[in-house]
Length: 228
Image (cartoon, rainbow, N blue to C red; front, side, top):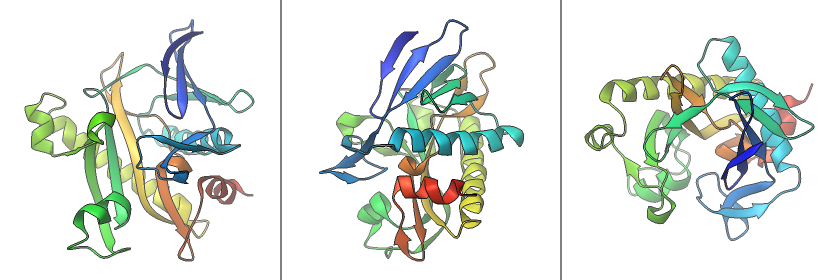
C-alpha cells in the first residue's frame, strides 16, 4: 500500500486495485486532554477508540448504502481497523458540514447572546472550511459559490443529504434511548462519476449524544448502539 495522507485520527493508503484504505487510530480530537468533536487538534488518545470508530462507521455506512444513499464506503476489516473506500475529491481543501439539533458547543459559544444551552434547533446546517490555521471558519452558501468551492445547486444537494443522513442517525440512536445533539459530516465528489457522496466517518468521535441528559463518551456510545 502507498501512504497518501497522515491525518489526525486516520491514515489514508492507496490500494493496488484503485480503491483506498482508511487506517483508524486511537487518537481523538480535543483540547487540553478533553474530547471535543469540533476541535481541529488531537487532544488525547483513547485505547479502543479506532476500533469503536470503525465499527460504528461500518454500521451506519452499511445501512445508508442499503438505502441507496451515495457514499464512499465499500467494506470494513475490523481485525485490521481499516475501511476500504472509493476515491473521492474534496470541495476546495475540504469542508465540514454540521447538523445541529441542540444548541451546544461552538454554536452556543458564537450565539450565546441569543441561544440557551440545549435549546432545540430544527436540523440547523452550517458549513465550515477545513483550515486549522484559521480555526475552521464558518462560510455561507454565497461565500462557497463566490469562491468557486461549490455551486448553489451542489450546496442544495449537500444540505438536503446532510439533513436526511443526520435524521437517520438521530432515529437510529433514539432506538437505544440516545438523543443526538449534533453531528459533523464530510462530503466529496466521486472521482469517477463526480456525484456528491458522503465520505470519512460516522462515529462517536464526530457527534454529541446524550442519554437521560448525560453526555455519552464515544466508546460508550458505540457499546450502547451496537449492543444486542
